[in-house]
Image 1 (cartoon, rainbow, N blue to C red):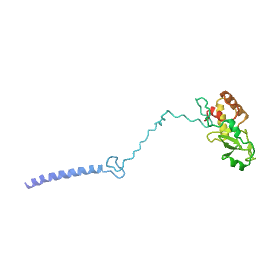
Image 2: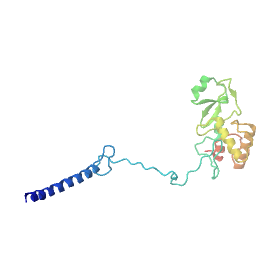
Image 3: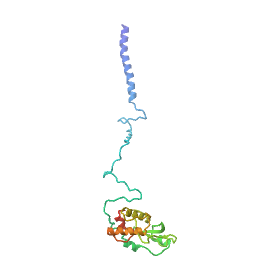
Image 4: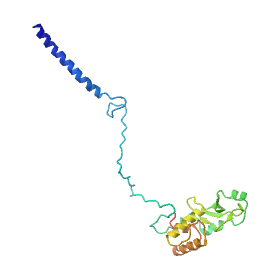
Length: 218
């Protein structure tokens, strides 16, 4: 009878040990390792999740529709709007002519009267009121000018860069068939004059503010 009581007393003990052995692996599985921080409420910091975008996903379009493609280098972007007129603060060509300094002066004089003087091609130009002007006498070794009057500029472009854009625009419109040289050649001036006449602008054959605006360059 003593043996039966011992066996009955051992059964609950074996059952308790079995429960403890079963619970230990579950506790180990719930304990996070240092390198795998969970993103639940018990974690100190939320996990940083990086979602990889599908390879064939297209970029989002801007709110106002797809962005327009820029014009290739060396071409003028097409415009569907009518030729624009210059803003009220653009200096007229007649006023630019009155600002032109035709007298020859030394380099010291030019530097004391104008802050921006550049060497372009075969001559020095000074900037004043939105136009480039030849700086006569700045350096006698560099005084080869295709045109000795004012040349309108925009976007910090140099005189030859503005002329290149004008030549390209006139070429696209069928007015100019010569080389894109950046020089205000006789053929370029004839093309400018023809365009100015068709647009009802002052016919002067030079790069002025109204012509640049009418070509849609700015």
